Image 1 (tube, helix red, strand yellow):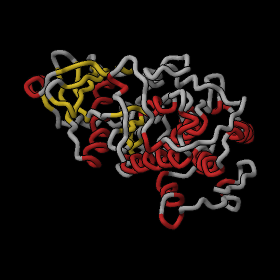
Image 2: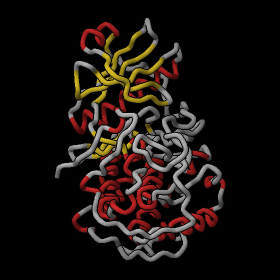
Image 3: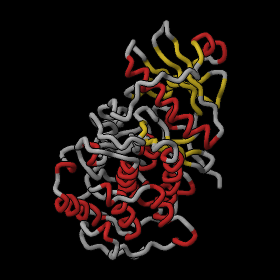
Image 4: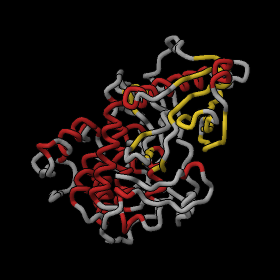
Length: 365
């Protein structure tokens, strides 16, 4: 199916065309309890959101899973970079570097990141390089390269340039809610799950900053994750020294500095699905959901889900947003339960002990 999208990230003003595969009738049920998505504000599409787009994540940290082992030697020099590539127009910038087009290669871009003589920055750059290699080279056979410029004290990360728009722009479109179908929401959810499965299968690697701005919808009808700047391994199952990600998408266990695993990405995906289903934010900045008791949390979640008319979406949300990670499904469980030929219909979880702490809920997807 052909998708008519404009390259939003290279434009300052435009009117976005929602991808054709998203545009089937959607329920117009509304609820006064839905907050505007303060975390998903005004974009180049001319939407009604009134806060800045979220281009930075919260505190990036060095977790106990980070090692002091020798850094990868698989990178080139500044001379190598300049001999092969010519930097073109700036695409965007974030909390740790800026992305530029490459004038002599339309399919690639470069993320230029400062090292500033900081060993932690250097370690983070190599960790992002490793995660990006896994996400793109393993799956797409795309070019991912790293060059270190010691004289300029920065690094150049070569990445695929994606022709499309990010999920923020779709959620933020003024006509989104009446056009995007439930099937399309679940389709996007499924595709992101598959991308996470690739990451999580490699040493428990997690994205760590899953949000609409980091999910790309491409012109070739595919979905890709971007920005692996805080990706980290969860193999050692240690507690964090701090938290990372974007406020409102961070799993409670991470905010409370507890032991965490790859399910932190599942929690973020649940919040993202809520964004898709409601065009609203689930956890406004004034809601300290990590400090809630279990009962308070589930009462809050149940109230927020009342504006969603589809029970299948609600069931997915419960399975992604469980307060205790032991009650939360992981990526493989979600794929097995909902996206295999044997499970095309959602089943009732009422007899599943893992969900005994949530309010009573019957699924009828």
